[in-house]
Length: 290
Image (cartoon, rainbow, N blue to C red; front, side, top):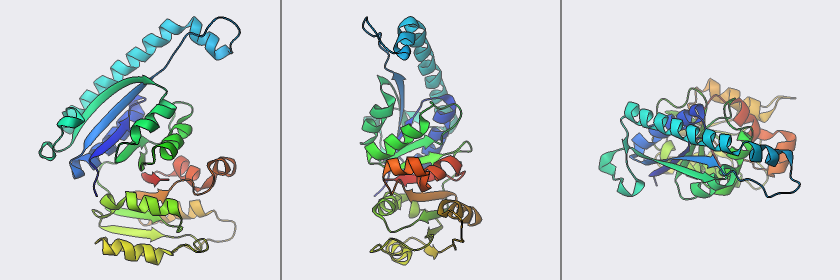
């Protein structure tokens, strides 16, 4: 198992650059192709009659909005080309990629509903690289990441402003014995095999009838991975997500592997949840799978 096709959404200059830089690190290690995708908003002038304020705004400013979308796409394509030159990445179509070319990349500029259509496109890829929610991302950035994790069925690597400047050597795996954690573990195997040290970390006790972290470690060792268990103590009134994140920092982890949304997505939204806490607060890159 390896990564050969990596999708990176380009929505803004900051988020596109973060995702691209992380994708390059992974692509260079696995001689993979980067599918860089920009999606313009699908705008339409509504029919006559009563319609909401948002549609009225689109109708009155349609030409300006279209021009803005065109300019953004042009600016981001120039940024993409500059980054490829900087990173010594050849630009070519995925169909023309071969391992002897090393890491390669292609640019796609589509008009679509990015909240849903990005997830659909991502279903045929090995890994998605995205930026952590930031000030310049669309207002529903958490919804976008959530939709991609849920609807694509593919592992998603989420990085912050510092991006991922080098391949991670120390990795923390969040393990609760659940199926999401198991899927994340499997999805991360290509990266875990390249790491120097992997810590499989359980906060508290696994759920009933779930395998403990020791079994996960034994599984990883069969794959030739240098893995160890860790069991940080959860004190009264402490939250598991905060304890796990602090433990990962103490271990100097350069990547966190975890399942996303072990509970109902709506329950996670209401209660906060492990996943949302990590998306909002982790400076360490996250590899998530659902």
